[in-house]
Length: 448
Ligand code: GLC
Image 1 (cartoon, rainbow, N blue to C red):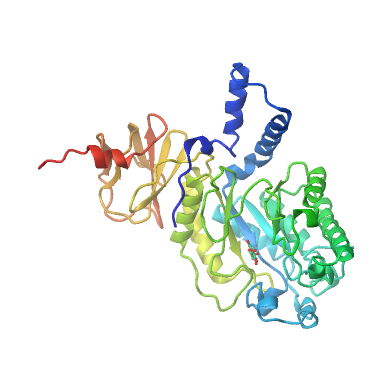
Image 2 (image 1 turned 180 degrees about the vertical axis):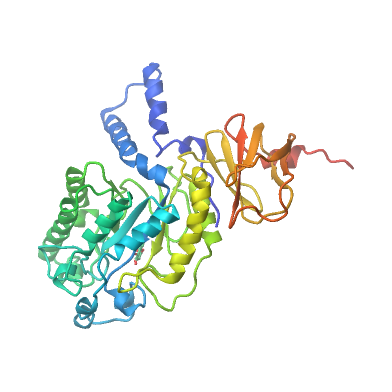
């Protein structure tokens, strides 16, 4: 997993810092008059920075894929990938009978894991609505669950003080117009009204919603979905919400999936990932990531000021697979000791090590050692003076020696003092910068 390096100028975009720069130069009279179009985009950027402030600080969220597919337990794409006829699949709606308030355990686990927000599938590609709607009977209150599962989720998130959002799939394998809309204008109009109507209900019936997470825009484009109008309605109903980029418009943030790649344009981004290989419950998927991998991924995201949206796929009764609980609980022990190194909006330039990842807050560099080398931990090419260092989990001071080419942290235990990753907080004299090319070029060669 490679984190991307981004040009320094682009670091500023998406965190609001660019606006500060712009504002400062305008004040000083340095900026030329902005044409009208750019002016409005500066206003849009300012509004985006305001709406996204909490999200940038949050860094870590829980994704929840839950729907009728969980009854079969063979992945959320089972309907399409096994070619199940609609009328057969519909039978699952009666069999889906989760225990009350299953979402409370999700929210508790998220909080314990250090996740600050949750995003739950309100409707996945299968077309079943987990929420109450006047627009279809294919929804939780009118089928097996007998109640609004989205409402339970909203209440659970609020009870734990977590932000929350709704995932919503535009693609719909169940609705009669879900595919026809691509080739029949009447069907398109009907389906767009249905889709906008469902989104309107989601944006109206649950109080303040923090995120709208669109998914798969097949088979229409932004014009077909009337996505501009869709987003306009969303922002009218929820002025503080943030929306992603999957309704065929750029939205507020990009959504790399199953990979950690910083957005090259400097836009805000969130990597969504599974804990095993499936989003929806897949009873036979035993390919679980280790807690160490999860912590490393979180560090990679925070390195480039990205978010990490990590998925659970609850069982049909709403309980969380045991392995997910085990992994997230261990991750939570780590995040509780190392929170300050993750909840940062600052991009981090140092990135070269064979055994550590890096994050930064102000002038503090956090070195996250995932393969502990023993009594000495070394870092090449740090161009910034180190003032002090400590083990983040215990606060214990760490001795160090620094010259032009490296800094060595010494007198450390032979076994890693924290697990699965040990973080050394390194206070620097200014923003920490690393240059290993300098080391390669300039290091004295003794024999030539
Ligand atoms: C893909 C999949 C979907 C999953 C989503 C999560 O779009 O189709 O099943 O919900 O990714 O990002």
